Length: 480
Image 1: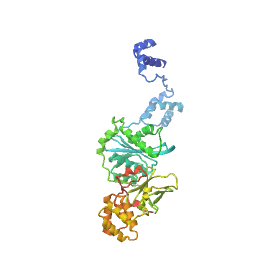
Image 2 (image 1 turned 90 degrees about the horizontal axis):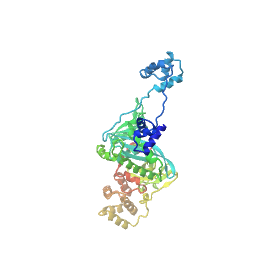
Image 3 (image 1 turned 30 degrees about the horizontal axis):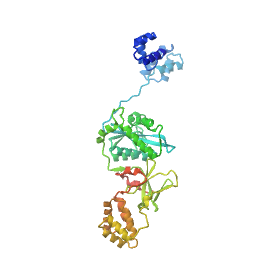
Image 4 (image 1 turned 60 degrees about the horizontal axis):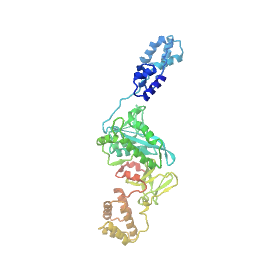
């Protein structure tokens, strides 16, 4: 060992010295010098293993029972004892451990063609958010051909959060693969056994809507979705470790920045940045359906006449024209409360309050519920400035609503601010057709047939849903 260290030091300090020169200085052969320089560690002395004399007569018998008959150690021990072995159990098992060769697990890498497969999984982590330790979930979706990865974060890992993360990943990828590989989590698989295997029914509905084939990894076969499991260690080492975040929104933003870095670095297997390969894979993906799918049972709420709904002991505002109506709610990322109308339009989005008994209000939700209606002549002028040529509507409204014409016209003007001009004119035409000039009729028609244009100002998250309708089963609206 000392010679090895000396040889290494001499060569490091005097790179020009030849093997023979070093050998002469140390009094050893140049072959010994050569052998020492190619070693990464000093040579170790290993004592030659000896076999107990009592086991020598049974060597061939033990080898045959172990490798041919595939007997267990306890069975072999009993067999040689019956054949005259007089040694101890410890002596036998030490020898058995030396000769037994554990089969090494290996698998053949499985590469897929563009758009053939994606893999989806998630992992929990504990991070510091706002100075407090918080459990978060990171979802990873990988397009198998390109290794292009989509990362989503959440504070929850229930079925709704899992489906939402998978759906967002498909939308961000811009298409759907032929098959998605998952594990046997209950959100995907109802019964994982080979003989009575059964998919989760709601997951099958999700698969049917997006048009991909579900595929699972067998229990104890993690390598079958290694593309998605391996990156979690990289995420932990290069994103989670030593990081802290000001807020959950800050965590989500930085997670997306990290995703960009992942997709732009050269992948060790493909030797190409995932983003570059994904440009080739994108055209092979199945086109996204026109409508989003919501297959989880969200809760129904009735909006109070002060424009509030209740959730987990706190109350949240919704736009004034939903007062007295039913809406449904869903939790997004375990952090946001989303409120949808019965026409499946996003009506409001709030951060969940951590304190029970809170009242969370967005002032814009009350902008149409104002008793100061103003002078009818002034209101008529305002209306006709926006909708010239609709004098007939004004006259019929005034004739039909003599007592509260001012109030009705004010409510209708406020409604016009929420929808596109052509959509609102269509509602006016329907009012004239049916001779109904009540603001609630206009509001109901618009809510059912058209998407609002106003922005919920409390969160940027609402912008991510722009352009997507939502499809759900009518049975989910049943009140119990």
